[in-house]
Length: 337
Ligand SMILES: Cc1cc2nc3c(=O)[nH]c(=O)nc-3n(C[C@H](O)[C@H](O)[C@H](O)COP(=O)(O)OP(=O)(O)OC[C@H]3O[C@@H](n4cnc5c(N)ncnc54)[C@H](O)[C@@H]3O)c2cc1C
Image (cartoon, rainbow, N blue to C red; front, side):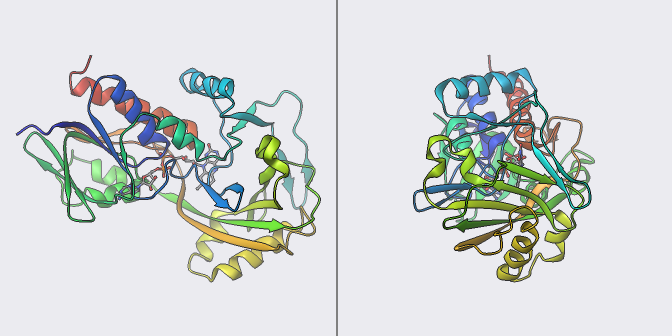
């Protein structure tokens, strides 16, 4: 029997939601299954009282005209703003490099990066808190087995979880020759993010700093500088990201130890960084792909595609474009107009 649903999409991150809206615009019936409560995946924002703090992606850029067109729409509605042009860089030996004039825009939604999930997911049917356990072939399509034992059948399925997680979902399924090996070869780097709030601290003179040549520290952002008019509300917040090397070495270390080490390192940029009023740690096990494949998606089996930021180009824009390309391929496969 042919399933009622045309496309099941696993993951409501940037790739899954951009794919879902394209598939829907082709008149196809689509359902997105997302394990967590929120939309946006690694474009993630945490709430603390009135404050919103970005602990995953920090900003995004747009180079492809298709993504730029979406960004221009969001700029027009005020959902997204230019956060900076260019970026401060700090190196322990070479010191500071200020951004030059004419740097290309780094965008951020003033209400937090998770707004991307809300914007891309508008009008898309998403089932939240719905972890997928397995995907397997059935007559006329694919059966998505949910962790709670229920199932969702669809003519085609698109996986957008980070490749190592996508691979686990298709364990036991018959794939195209080489597809499992291709997925297995995609490595992701882990990243620790420390969020720290400071009462009465003067805002630093930079919005964000890319740290180069430091063993532990990769990035420090003054989160409020992304918030537009709401930026001054609440205590000053720094977002500190570790290097993948530090994160790997401390993967299972107590979070207090991780926060102490990273905030101590951040005193090189902000001398008061190690004296926060509060702090939180988030571990991203799959933060960014080490390298990307040149294809914008993987055709793992007939009617089963894998997309996300490991395909084509990386980052938020790469995930968007990968979702778009996979959706167009599914529309062709399903004979949609
Ligand atoms: C710390 C950090 C900093 C970053 N900084 C930047 C930056 O400054 N600029 C930039 O452009 N990019 C940045 N990135 C990368 C950017 O966030 C990602 O490239 C992009 O968000 C990836 O989108 P995606 O849709 O491919 O994957 P994801 O966002 O990971 O979406 C996958 C979704 O699948 C869901 N999922 C996984 N398994 C299951 C399952 N079994 N069942 C149901 N759902 C499931 C997940 O919950 C998630 O919502 C950063 C990432 C991190 C972690």
